Image 1 (tube, rainbow, N blue to C red):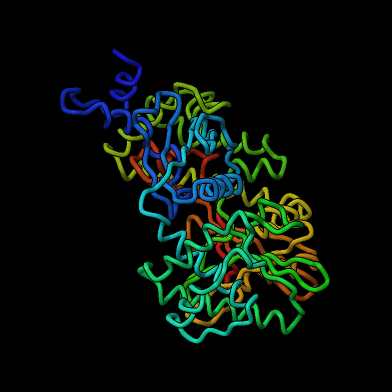
Image 2: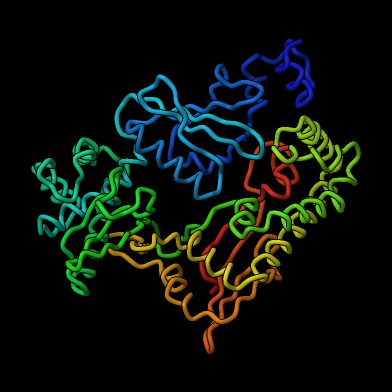
Length: 451
């Protein structure tokens, strides 16, 4: 019997004759990567290319390098070990490892042109840059688009030559979007922001940051457009679109990279041991501490045993499973809170570099388009302005939620409070999510300022 068949029967012991080979392989690789990384992209597991040691994903894209780089950026922000690999393909894949599981992401061409999610975001980002450069003031979606169709993209300063094809495609296909009017209105709202910013401080150029960043801006900068002032300084603008009451997580990472960033791996291992002693070790048949979650390199065969045990545990006693997850979650929440209370300087440094993600010389502001108007995401801006004044830091648990916690920043007389969360963010069966995501694999998010 092959390794794949043996492993699959451990995970899902049903009669072989009733299960296809593809279903078996897919079962092995279910949820290797959280789907968060693929939001907005068409993707699937390549069951033929995947093996018992590596999951291979295929992403379909009309702009392969740009979309590959965006997925890689998301992974690096989350602290995932991922880099460009090498193949005979014209676009190199992403190779990496998460929780001891190796993966490869191949980005392949998509028939039918630009994906709508990419088209929609490009409308909101590109069109305001063109209108500002040309001094055009749009009033409605139809006339704005008609104006843009007559633009010679090759002569625009706001579009890098590497992005000219994507810019022309965005213009040509804008009206094919199911959200055409909404996104054109959002573009008008962002243009209003640029004009207002120009009134405050004279702007020389605005650049579209689709693939190429302007000279002087790091390639990994999270900005969507870049404002260059007359004094030569840059401002990165991260664009959002939504309703008045919508909000987006401004940090999305995991326990392990947070502790690594603080230089506290020993503290993390102590927490892992505590969670094992108080929760996992009490579950019948659980493998030893050294490898129950994959061990030091994440590849211990005991991890598969744990997944099977947790799946059976949930099936036989869901109430106990959920209670144990809550216990593990609380151990890790307390540990993370202790970490953030340990050193004010390290906490402030982490917030600056990982939450705000400001480049040394190119600060970032977040602007949300709301209809044809705009508003600043002031939570993020407020944190950045307040950080230099902070004298005290206090992290503490929410009294009303098992996953929420807070970071309270105090100056002499003022206080702002960051709303955080720690939780399982994987789907799938009980051997993959919750207890199956394991202590050091839980997701950590910053969800804006507490009201």
